[in-house]
Image (cartoon, rainbow, N blue to C red):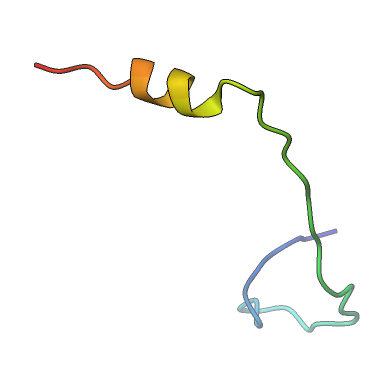
Length: 42
């Protein structure tokens, strides 16, 4: 099985489209604080 995000694959015939795929991400309560703490000033 070949999985791709492009509408064509050179040398292959598309037999079936599976449709959209989605996902979820849950951020912690301190997302903003942790984000700014990860920025390093040089």
